[in-house]
Image (cartoon, rainbow, N blue to C red):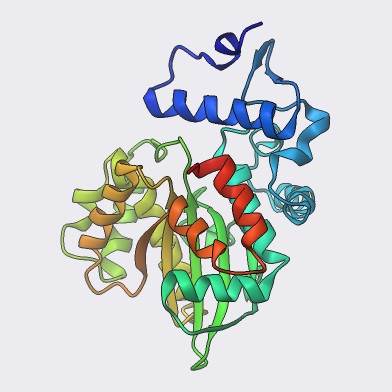
Length: 306
């Protein structure tokens, strides 16, 4: 079977086609592994199931993914194991490769946060949010939904930290690779709920009506959940002093950048900020840290190039 056969999917747009080829080349040329299957078809961006650890950029990230996958399922969360363990084109192993690795290198993670956000982060701290915990860094994390938006919104990763002045910080991350924001359906009851949250949290007047369409709807839900967690949800007792929702995406992902700009423009008086960080921006900052440089080199080779 030719390389063209195992990387061609008729529905791919230009970017997906490019990145599917990138992942297939990485599997073949760097990992030296055969292609795996999606259903009954061999595809170049899939790994054989027994080689699942190779879908992560470090031993620490793979160990974390193995452990966390079981925890998420026990918590009733949504985690597609194929996306995580064998699909190299998925954003899920990317998120685990970043935050699973950083969870094992916490001092370096603090330095990276300071570099990327220009905040005087002192340390990562474990925090209890209702019935759930954040042990400094977690992937595929959500609070008890009944205390917050009462929907299936979850974060690809979260970071809980303490600033040098003693204030607490929540960083909620939405990770993108070739995927776009999800197209959840609009319904009267959910529209009313999200519109009310926008008003309650201090967003600009009319923000929900401007942000409810597919281009920004998922990001808006993420931002609303971030602010809900910050202020303690139904308990009314704030858990964090500051919060930010970060979209971590390809540097050339103009749709993700536009969504961040649109939500930020309607932020109003809501305390939670929203920022875009490009994959290239992340890896450039990590390359400046001696303890992350090797990992950063692998990230650049697999996801960024150059």
